Image 1 (cartoon, rainbow, N blue to C red):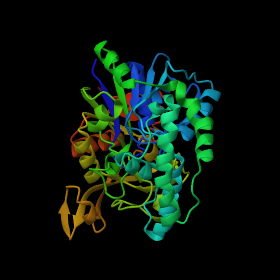
Image 2 (cartoon, rainbow, N blue to C red):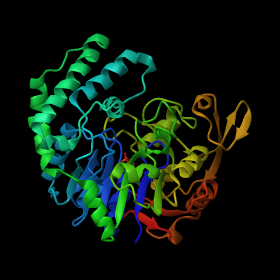
Image 3 (tube, helix red, strand yellow):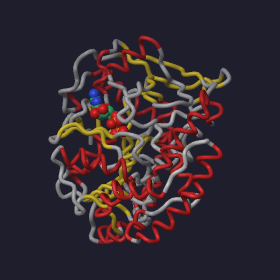
Image 4 (cartoon, rainbow, N blue to C red):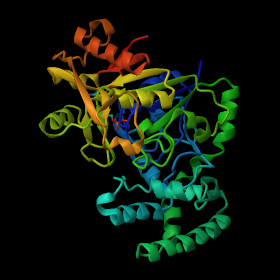
Length: 425
Ligand code: GDP
């Protein structure tokens, strides 16, 4: 059986977590390959309801090995808190079902401070960061100014390395931001309280994955956020600081030779966006509030109300292309059941001209949405499990989206629970 990546097609929060949780049944290994604790994957299953931030969503399945790859922003403090809360709800966590790459770089305590300080400095020009330290972390990673998880096994070298980094970082904290400097005592506390706790899970996941690949094991790659937040292909600079695309999975997972035959792109039946930046199809006022309430669109990590709009076919088609999606999971179709007619953003107007191509980021602010309406179905579809049982109007909405984005919609999610799914293949 082939490898698979589950990725977001839009701005994130499409429901990737519930899809990974559902599909892990068919896989032996789940790998997170980018991003950090700055988003939340919501999963509802027999253990309860979870908002996973860094742990792979396969953690609930017996026999599945979960890997945090070298591409993630490994925040020991947040990870340890998350591990404790998941374990308290009865989910077994051992070095057998959770493995952390020794090549993952550590998010250091000052990264969170720097994120916050820079957003404060930017005032009304802020990026809308979740302030989890992700942007300062990735810029330091690429400047080679952080440490690898595997260094925890070499305490003497680690302390010397941290002291050097601290000296440099304190110059920035005190001179640029006029903030308090760090001390080695503070770093010792961080090492003892968080790093030592996660250390038993750190190992050479690269060789583990290579062995598993040779043994024919099936691997699922789990992405965070979506195409439009990809550092290279998204709405720069309102992107995240890593690559959310499936193409990055082999590099960020620690298995550069991996072939990913199946890319499941997750699309929400309408649009949501957290944070700043252009959002062409955005709805406002009462119409927006109704949709936000119907879909419970408040951030899993921050609780912030999400910006909402109709499904944006221009952005979604672009998202499908950059992910090279082979099939689509359309989620939250049930949320639209209250609408008499369903708005869809079918094209953009740029300088008064209609376009179907997703514009360059600098052009997006002046782009206007063209909205068309489809017939609503006005009944509860959350209990439906078969395509033929869906109301005709719901089928027509799905078929219209499928034609417009040029990719088969094989999963329709009609509720947050694991089994609230219609499989169409
Ligand atoms: P992710 O980051 O892509 O995993 O998405 P989030 O977890 O941030 O957001 C998805 C939200 O929608 C979560 O609260 C899920 O429980 C919920 N959800 C997922 N699929 C469905 C669905 O089909 N219907 C409804 N009503 N909720 C869903």
